[in-house]
Length: 85
Image 1 (cartoon, rainbow, N blue to C red):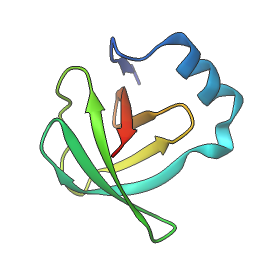
Image 2: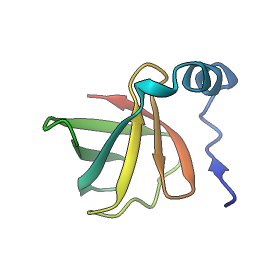
Image 3: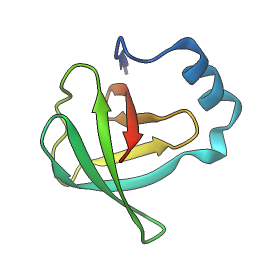
Image 4: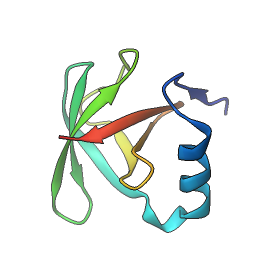
């Protein structure tokens, strides 16, 4: 699978995520409007994220992974910067 990496993702973010693979949180998108999204995490909590950079096509119900330390959101074939609100 080819992965599209947003221009807002810095090399240090990718390095942080790669060096801390257990920090990824899995969840499902419950709200999305292009510039922000709300994710219901599998641990029972929710997190509202502001998508940084170009609008990302994330659909409600889509499975995603969020790395809070690196501030990355992985959805389908997209990796982008996302900051908790």
